[in-house]
Length: 432
Image 1 (cartoon, rainbow, N blue to C red):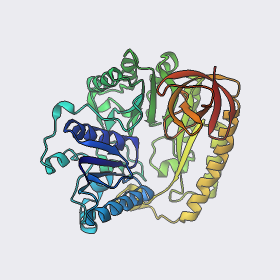
Image 2 (cartoon, rainbow, N blue to C red; image 1 turned 120 degrees about the vertical axis):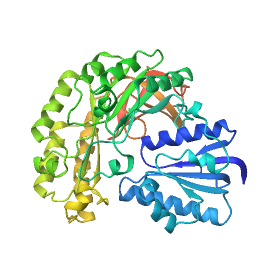
Image 3 (cartoon, rainbow, N blue to C red; image 1 turned 135 degrees about the vertical axis):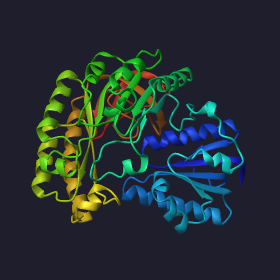
Image 4 (tube, rainbow, N blue to C red; image 1 turned 45 degrees about the vertical axis):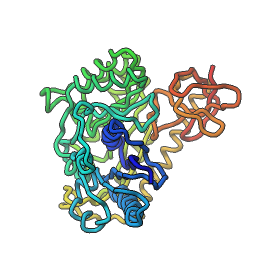
């Protein structure tokens, strides 16, 4: 067993990853050898950062805890701690069911792990993180929590009400990253649209993005998880005119049928959704839109699914993901609706949507052949350098594969790449 070593297993979303990176910085400052998601099983300390969003994510977290609990029981690892959304929500149940874990922490008290091992939390490092991503990009969490009341979502039950960080705090964090060579920033929140309302009494996303864009050394800014109701339209000219703000927006729509939008408590109508998308595309003609759709919510019918499919075909989203309804305890849907759609039927409906999106994505990618795109290089894998354009966020979107036999590229640098071929979800290119 390696002394003064810690392995942090971070599951779930990028917001979770930020928490893990903040804790990792504390351990690094204490002189610990740090690993992320390592398959090595000889760490003195293992920390599992859990996700509690839906059934599949919860099961992955539980399986991971159980795997390391067995290692803890057999003495192959030193101490085992669990943190994050799952333990925030099910603390008592986990303590009773998996007692092999040394101690459980929630979403917000994970820094107490340091106290548990006889160390002291350093407040002067609160805005510092040890990146688990390549050093040229970072996720920036601009708020925590959510004030929305969507029927299916347990996240507000876990994270509480929306809490915006101060602009000064965010800018300080980004400036520190830039000083260390980070060039690309993914701004994340459960609800970007709400940013500023709690702290500044008005929506401030536009002002925040402009101030970040003014920082020398910030090459790309990308926006994730905007909410369609009460959308901050003043962000659109910022996306269009600021060169380092990517023409990209992640806007979670979930459905289009008026009946389903009402049942989901989304506070927006079909007509308003169409108007929103029309205005976004008119004001930012080159934008790539990512959205997420939910299939199998209670009372969804074949007609609702057909309406959603028509919507997907008409809108031709550049990026689209889908998930199935999970009947989460204590949510509005759990209390008020019968979950009477089978899992197999939910998956069938999701498959219908994703099959159509695959064709749309392939068509959009084919249209990029022969065009040149500014591309950042993330890594080298097998015989390719792997990069992304401004229209692609790490892990979830297309990648650009560039043959490595005849050229040597630098990780974290930008290149002009001409697209030569494509698949449904990837591009192939050559540096010009």
